[in-house]
Amino acid sequence: MTSKPTLLLVAGDGNVLSEMAAALRDDFDVLTAMDRASAEAVFRSSRPALTLVDIDTPPGRPQTSESLGLINDMITLDRLAKVIVLSEKGESATGVGSTIQPGSCEVMRKPARMEELRLLVQRRLAGRELERADLQHKPEPFTLEGMFGASHAMQEVFRSIRKVAVTDASVLLYGESGSGKSAAAQAIHRLSARKDGPFVRINCGAMRYDVLESEVIGHEPAGGTVGATSMHGRFQEAISGTLFISEIDELPIPLQGRLVDLLCEHQVGLADYRESAKTDLRVIASSCTDLMKAVGERKFRPDLYYLLAVVVIRVPPLRSREKDVLMLAEMFLDRFAKRYGKTNLAFGEDAIKALEDHAWPGNVRELESRVRRGVIMAEGGVVRASDLELPAVETPCLPHTLKDARRALEREMILQMLEKHGGNISAAASDLRVSRATFYNIMARLGIQRKRVLKSTSSGQILNHDE
Image 1 (cartoon, rainbow, N blue to C red):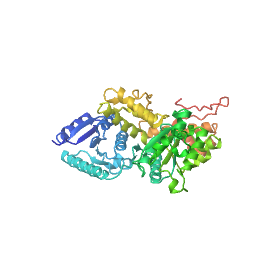
Image 2: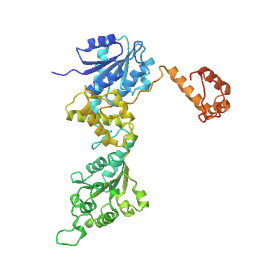
Image 3: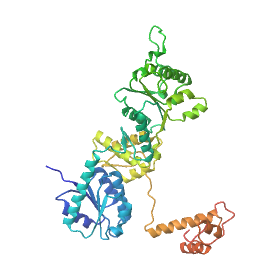
Image 4: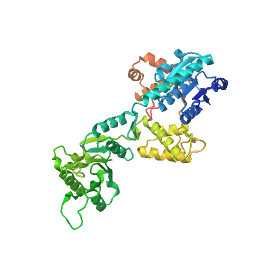
């Protein structure tokens, strides 16, 4: 038996919601929501094939801007999302055309006959299936060998990885702890001609000096046979593959010198070499600190730096990847929900705000850990900010109308200019590029009193009728 497509109906009016659900339930699996928060939760957990949003709200319900914000959020979460907007005003008055991604949304004027609505729904669903089939024949632009990044910063990293992967050049990866340097190194290996060879990792920050020497440099065979070319240890294991040396900045100076000798002897990372002497091995190194600065401070050998830094790639911290946090969080949520048998989990609105507001000092590793904990601790199908061990973010009180918003902005600018210029009207008006008369009129309209700045205070407070 073929399953019915899933439709999400969103309306602030319960009567409208009931009528639409009753009319469409025979042909579709219908889900309903009456506000933005619940609609987002249903969308995240069910990923409906199509969403119908009635933006004509009864008195006391959220304004049209909330509906448009909901539509934008859904399209951000699923670029194949399809939405039909129902409005008595039609497209010209909804603002949909200027705020929503083209092709994702269509407006239908109310009252609409149910037969026309069904035909429109079927057409939008058919278009979605064609897009999905087309995408299956194209590489996903936001992923690269297990890495994810829709942000401009990560797209630049992906471009660099693709370019360097097809060469034999040594690579130096910079980035904060947990930002994804190891994933970048593995992506380079998988995209290279050595992808079928070993990927061997050494962590210089996690070993004692004597162990590190044996692991990185190798040791002589038993019996004291002389010859640095023995290459025992990880170096030997990585032949025909990739050797990834993480936290290379933690490698002691004496071992740096020995590593230079080893790389030069086997011509690893050098452009000018003899084929007979070349070792079939690629070296990728990573560091959390600026090695050029360490070179200047004589904490890192310049010859080793230039052997390793043929190509330098900087992996950005998560806080600078503005588009990626929520998408990564959703990916981790799906992964751990499946692992722990918790289906239909979704982030609550407080969790979404907390994820967006957090500075992520631990980068992607911290995000993965917090989402994993959130899945484990969640109750009732919703992951809250407290489940992630993140503080809830208070939602600022926004003006109710565009007129109120403009008034608040004008008021703030006038007060700032008066404070900046010590109450001097002429200077404040000049800074805002308006005449003194206009400035006085705005002050009167906003209820701001003309006064002398109190010279006896450092704050320079400006009094007005509302204070």
